[in-house]
Length: 401
Image (cartoon, rainbow, N blue to C red; front, top):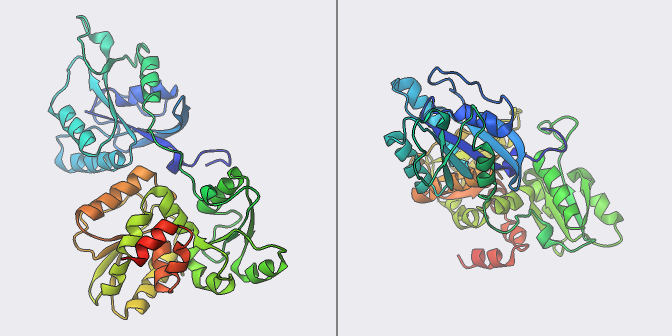
């Protein structure tokens, strides 16, 4: 990703779905104006999702996703394609159902529509290859296009542009600060930190503070005390990496608001309240109980990795029990969560909001607490109430549990 690119997690995800050979890849190429996806007359050419980041006005930054066909008769390969297709559906903000106009809609298309509706995904039905129709195009709720001639492609783009998800603009922290406020960001530099760059949540937080006309200072936890002592006025807030929560909490005076990147990301992705409501589940963990630690990224894990080493160690120390830990990362996420007493999720910076909420809903439907890295670490270290004071309503809610 370039420095000027919108992160994929903040782009509107548009998934193209349909049967094999309906022309999904051709439509994707026509919409993007590029040969993004391989096109062939052979059924099942697309076996893996293909993505393209672009600007699509008036939607703005989008991620176009071409998916494998949903009608494969080869059981093993077909099942794999369907699983991949469903993963894309779980994170699609808008779905495009591509149908071969000459063949019309069949049961596979109707099944896809049922899935869109079940998952509450806005969708558009597109009948491709309309140049092959010998009769007048019938009336339908969908639109007729031709990826070959370009007929209807502009209309398709216009309709997609009008399907922008409605809602208020989401922010990370700038609604909690005033112009000219100073925010300190604490970012440890250890063996797991990427060389020569900062991780996405840190960069996003800096930009959000600047968008709120605030100012920020970035410091390692080892230099935090000296920095605070050098300031003529106290900062409006301190935001820290959760890994050094306790260290930072011991340094920052109680009258300075304190929270973490992970907690603010959980709010941004829409699952902070759920995480706070479920955190008490950690108190009930017994030896042999299983929890799932889930991350949205697939970074190279170091010897002291937060998800596979630090948090499991802290949980076992906190509970005093031999809790079993399973992990998953990237697009991998089990829909059957029944074996687990809790799901512990990262902030989700690499996942879009719809996918995070899908995971949260999977857990809620199975009555499995869905909690968060920052909330969990603050809770285990006895500083959760302090970190929730920056969210007054949530703080009161937590105290009244």
